[in-house]
Image (cartoon, rainbow, N blue to C red; front, side, top):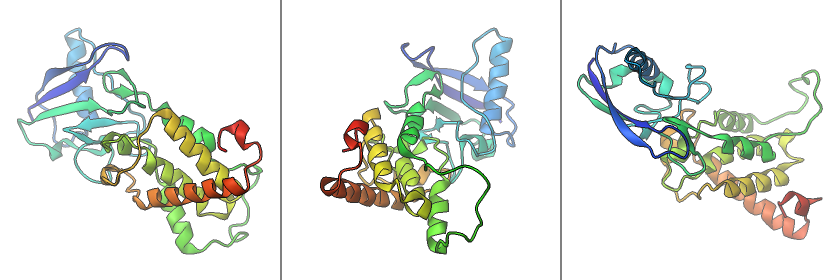
Length: 261
């Protein structure tokens, strides 16, 4: 396959970015998208140029680090897939492919196609966990959990935190991500003791990081590699409303100190 690439290049977070064009001849149609970029980078290096910087790790659709916008779609063509799982057979010989980083203010560009998604880490650290004793695994049947709730919790837990939902949303909303993390624990008995604190803390941190609100475009669900449903956003809204209302009657201990009153 002979392709042309329009790639976003940006030296650092404070530099002015621009699109640069590259020829990509002789690309095997069974190569993955990242392997195609590897081939292009080898040719750039042979000419003494700077290779295109892009994020990657597992290349197995697990980590979500391969955060690219391909022809305007986060992670590129196809459903329930990450960039590393996109193969060049999805394109036609002679195509021009536009490659950009995820576009969102809370995801500042570090270089070229690499963005800083540590805002997701900070949201997770604000409440996306449970405080329990570590040690040996408990008996599987010690805490009975209805199968429908266990299935929903597992569906929400499938979120890999790649940020495609933010990149696809016109509001740069992180509510699919936060909704998945809140839903995961809200559905299980282990998550009940910190249920109110969790949702209030995570939503407060989400707002602080500068993510927008959901206005029901559903673009997030369409590009999610884990196929997280927008139902988790509805659950997030219910959890937040319930926690906010109850906090007016029964404030959380030390809530003011934690910024979740």
